[in-house]
Image (cartoon, rainbow, N blue to C red):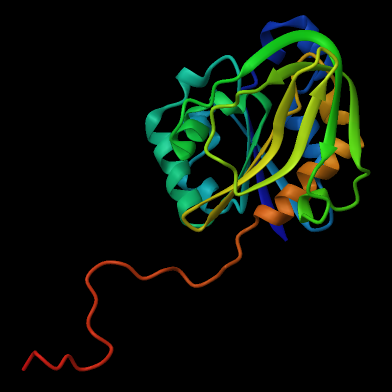
Length: 241
């Protein structure tokens, strides 16, 4: 069983009627319902909960953390960001969605500005699967079409991904690296682009399939932890008595 925590600001849904109509219970609840499966157990956390819902106890019980943020990146406490980073370095998986590219935790783990082009015009997006053998692409057709989405365009200021799985084409002509994986310490990170708050993207079965696949891929491997620091020799050293 993979234990997942879906984190969401849960502010747009409270402040903007247009978003509330699409996600009346919040993006986090739509995701939680959409990705739950026999091998995936889902909990949720939001910005305005104590410690943003990401207490040490909650994070220690989380195998994969999903992050959606947009309008309140600066309101996330730096101490919580440090806590999440340490859990990723120790093996927790992290899936960053859409505008989470500008979150403190993603920028901290990437070490770059993570900026990009954008345009909100409700245009068609076609996500091409460019690495069909990857586990995150399992069960998908060669592309996913979203009739209405926000455009993200290159250049995306991230380090070169370990693996590129999806490339988006937009009706206005731009392209974007929309599915990228990274490793940091013992943890796996998956950035997945779609999911603007005014469109019903997180009800799309293929989008949910990608996120489910990402959860299974990013789940901790439970490999032996690396040993670091001062270390005694395994064999006798000839020049020491």
